[in-house]
Amino acid sequence: MSEKKKKPIYKRWWFWVLAIIIVAGVAGGGGESSDQAKKSEKKQTTEKTTTTTATPKEEPKQEEKKGVVTKEKFEQIKDGMTYEEVVKIIGAEGNLVSESGEKGTPSHVAIYEFEGDGSFGANANFTFQGGKLVNKAQFGIENEEASKVTITKEEFDKIQNGMTYEQVKQIVGGEGHKISESGKPGTPEHTVMYDYQGEGEIGANASLMFQGGKLINKSQFGLK
Image (cartoon, rainbow, N blue to C red; front, side, top):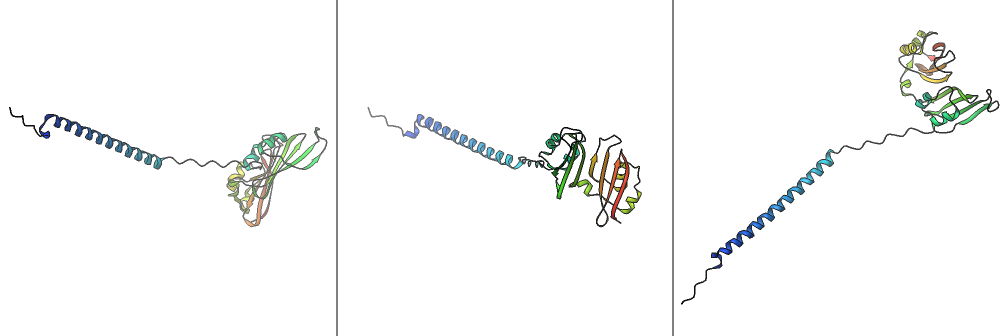
């Protein structure tokens, strides 16, 4: 018998099955790499979008000035407070500038000065009698609202004794600098003095004193 002629390898059935398996494997691997590339690209896009649209962090608020008297602190300090209560609000000890009488007695009077927030030399003075605040006064402490308001001679002449502070504000157009206050609000002894920058000569101003809620005195310098 003659030997059976061998078929070429590419004509054998198992060759093509093996070839199909190899091709399928390569295609599957390529698909996986493609998916990974897409996922990587999507991740980079997401990160870029997140970075671009991220809400910027808010800048930290400026801390309140400690150890100096601001307009807000000056208003918080009320008649009848102790020195310790005043120091707690301001955040620093004051400088004792005057003292009379024996400590612990009703006749003991002490005046303390504190640095003020405002123009050069701004300060606030607090007078205590018998351990309680009886008067507060300030000079040069910044008040943005009051600084925008000025008074004329015509407006000054319209202001009459017996008017309330609200009536005065309507004439002048706004609030003045509270430069001194004593007594409890709502009582006949409550006394407040306001200062307005004036229109006229250099340093022109007007001072108005209220007692028991009514104007009792007005004075001016250099108004026109």
